[in-house]
Image (cartoon, rainbow, N blue to C red):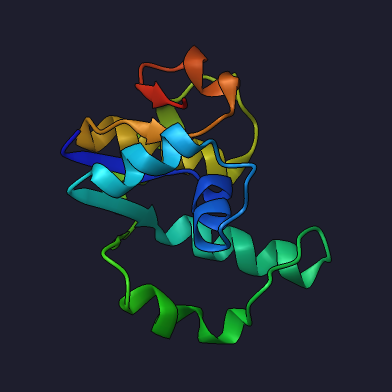
Length: 128
């Protein structure tokens, strides 16, 4: 695969070397040329940390420095993404996941996620 977009949980598990991420998925990510992380994922992580829904092993305040030392590419949210999001049927109600779906659709790139609800949309979901 030449390009993929990581769902937030896949990014966290990969970053924190969490064994919840299947080794085959980890290997596929590592072998992919262009691995995108949406700015929406950083927004989601910040909110979930603030409300105590998740914990990280590392300090979120240093995430930009750590991110910049990886091969990952930051995927901004475009106006086109918001238009696509608005047109999506409400199969999935999580606003962050819906944005990732819209971004993957607009760029025709697979989305790495274990969330099977993504299969209700015309996006290629990858999970091994």
